[in-house]
Length: 269
Image 1 (cartoon, rainbow, N blue to C red):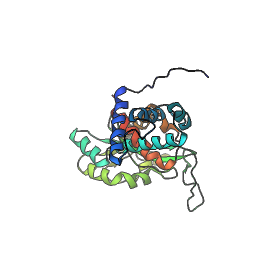
Image 2 (image 1 turned 120 degrees about the vertical axis):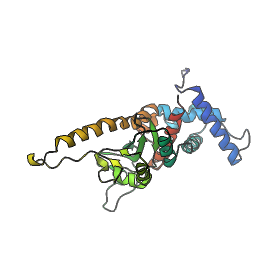
Image 3 (image 1 turned 180 degrees about the vertical axis):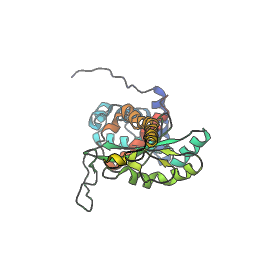
């Protein structure tokens, strides 16, 4: 056996923040003092190690001196209290209007995961994305013009197209925001989303007489150039909170994990 000292590369105030949330949660559910194997601070360290390092829960539980079952219970409790801190979509859009933002950016991403049992009516795997050739969940991200993550949707199975997931979780609120002067930029996966959702014009089938007009091509390039900053939102969360790169717990929890990551990201600085 070799003993060594490790450092968790997370700001101290982030650990303290999660510790306070966990302590408040314990008081809310009536947990007796001293009845837990870990205090709120050590539980917060376990949870943040999972988010930051994407370590196996068995190893995290062993390091904390608890059983694997207790480790999973503490992890899911931490995910739950963090996900509750993520803002709702209407709150985010109201904040954007108050800040005078010119637009917001909508983008979807696949967060990969282990395979989950479930099939569509046609027999295809529900959680398998043909586009990405991988199992996972579809999550919608909304970002500020500079690419700062603002909002994360709940998860849909990986076989769900972006526009379908957006219709379920985002478009009704985005329509109202667009009517109030806050349009949304998106990629071609959202063509047909409706008024106020600005997307590039699709190129017609390869015929010279049907080539896009120069003005349309210029508009498409402008939309792509501005919208590309929105792809930073998912990338920032995935790189900072590596648990989002591949989820090993139930894929149905991907939405909560993504919202928890957003809540942590908001207080990082």
